[in-house]
Image (cartoon, rainbow, N blue to C red; front, side, top):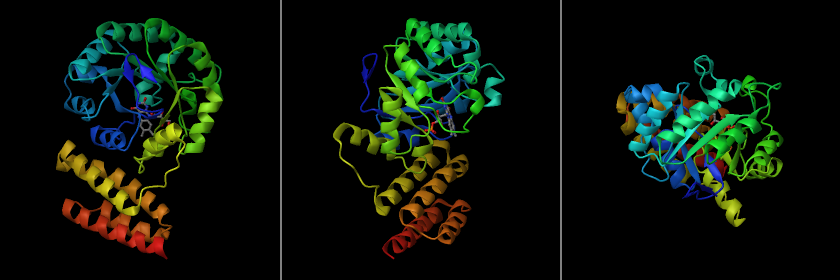
Length: 333
Ligand SMILES: Cc1cc2nc3c(=O)[nH]c(=O)nc-3n(C[C@H](O)[C@H](O)[C@H](O)COP(=O)(O)O)c2cc1C
């Protein structure tokens, strides 16, 4: 699959997730084989106004291609934000028309743009005109069940020059409730000739196959399934290419990944913010390791408590080693 002239390594992409797919997490998922990784969303006006956190959100992960996702509702912010992101090394700009959060839709950004396609297309046109790199678009099925207009938005976006479309198979009004409807992505695939990516509730190889078959999409995008399992997009991507099934990484490998991610997150944000930020990754990693080793719930609870309340990196590392030793005993029992 290609986005403009840019080849995507395989058919499993890591979804943009605010507060999660920062440069350290994207770097890890890409190193473990994700076909493409997308930055968390950055508000275009914040980027233009030089908010430090926005710059950090757009930072390249040192792995290519570098995809920066922008959100916004004003053409001049989107154009200027895209220019800044391109200047900072973005290889692809993705536009967010899928975020359901009230603080985003209230400002007429994210999925609110699906209620006003003329304005959505004006934002797309302004972004594309501002940069030389390919522009892609992420959306939902529509605002609600009565307005499933993703095929129309996709058609108009392609006519404007968008080079790939990702569809989360839920409406905005569903937020994250119910199940993603992969069948409902097929009309989008039928409406355009550019690559279409299906997203929502894909957490295994079988689900990836189901989503591809039902939607006819060219690729899948995985979000929450990669939390605590940064290897998942890579494993599914390789299996789609080769047909070879891989087992989950051993506890020793899982430990290596979570320790490296912890250190990178702490240095990316600085220790004070990084320590807090890394906790969600530690929690998910412990849950994954406990499930892998069939450890009792009480064991997981004890280690979560010890590790997530620790403020000192060296004691977190020591506790992680002890926790994974403990999980290994459970696995052997
Ligand atoms: C914590 C969180 C943050 C998210 N942030 C973004 C974002 O910044 N941009 C975006 O387009 N989608 C965002 N999403 C939506 C995901 O990209 C994805 O569309 C959604 O989670 C469905 O996929 P999944 O079931 O594989 O998680 C976010 C989702 C979650 C759970």
